Length: 137
Image (cartoon, rainbow, N blue to C red; front, side, top):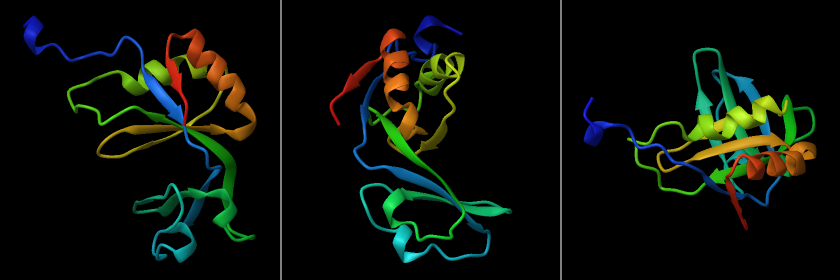
């Protein structure tokens, strides 16, 4: 591969922290996306052959729903070029080394890395130590 054809690799990643606390919710594969999951500052739905997974504001999820959280999300500054490689890896490797689990969500324009809310400060410290820039949300 010629140098001009080499994938673009960011030396550091700029991320901002979303204000909302988020939940990851599991519904049956055949369920409709409920109204409570359609609104708020962040909402994402993924349907597979086995499940419907939702990411939405934690406070909107009714009691009794199967959920995890609360999470806080890092938003990668975007929009990102599809030729970029290693963005998630650059963020996830130091978090994994620090024992901080994540839930990732990608959109057309960017990536989001969710960490449990009680691990947010530790995640910020790890990402800064790895050379990433944390921007005001």
